[in-house]
Image (cartoon, rainbow, N blue to C red; front, side, top):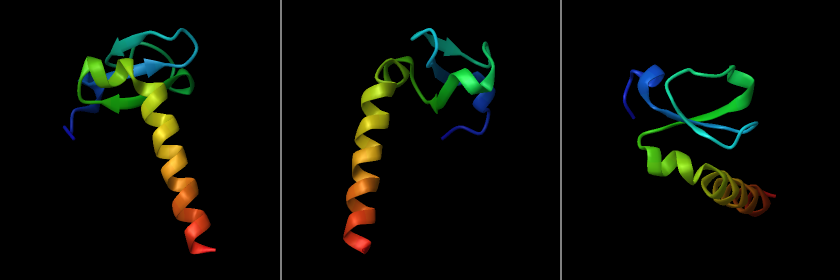
Length: 61
């Protein structure tokens, strides 16, 4: 991932909009994402990651 995260893409959880850079408060944003397309699919990516982590955690128990 690029080191200049300020200029990557973010998904605003409050508005549902993709942002380029730090346009909104950090409590409203998730990311960063390398591309606008990735940010547009942020919710799907977050759900998939959460399911994967839950499976890994269950396997550890």
